[in-house]
Image (cartoon, rainbow, N blue to C red; front, side, top):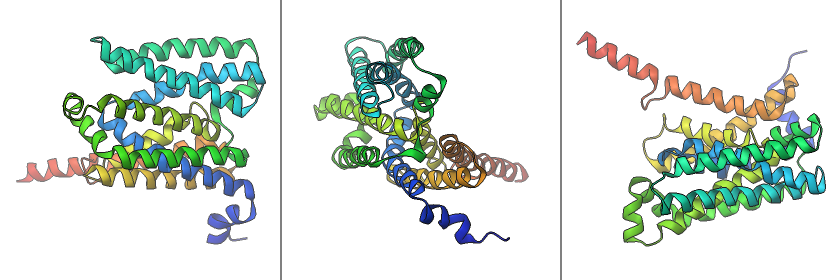
Length: 293
């Protein structure tokens, strides 16, 4: 029997409530996380998101040891350790000659090793899989409330600190001298990165949440010239990756979180090859044209 467009694209979300909740959670996460990824790339802190996602692990493990597989306890623990690592790395980078990426790497490695040690004390491989890869198809109302609140706070902060964040990407010392708010704006930014990773933890897991933050942002760089365009496009590409990944997962019976991130990865690779701004094929075509001349 031929599969119609309705059966392939709409029926999974019309007929199944868990698919609608999964799509809602993924869309909300993409709208907040992907724009933050644009600023991480501009600040040359792309790997910080990955470091922070692993830094959540000890808090998640403590929550698991105390309350079992309780999402509120694990989320609270992850938020505390994530904010602590972000705060400590920011303080060290401002009080010592050590760059923030180096201090972040140091605290991230300490946090990761502690988290692995704590996870090894209790729990099964099934519990660990839930922690690492999330339960996007099992989102309940409380999880959606958390992601909604995180997205609202991120978009509000983006509106309030937009100019300062852009100026800080260009010259952080100037922002500190001219505005006197560079430290506050930077800490707010790091706090939002942690908050989105924590809210994304239940949706995509600790290992996958950072993918929806960085891959759409990196892809948008090859299509949009200005920062505001990159922010909007990154959010839209994140939403598209979530939709495609969920459909791929539903129709081919594969894990949802990796499907979503792989979809974002395909979008990035396509952008890398075909993007009008420094895409590989465009650069190759320009080189051949200049050679003919």
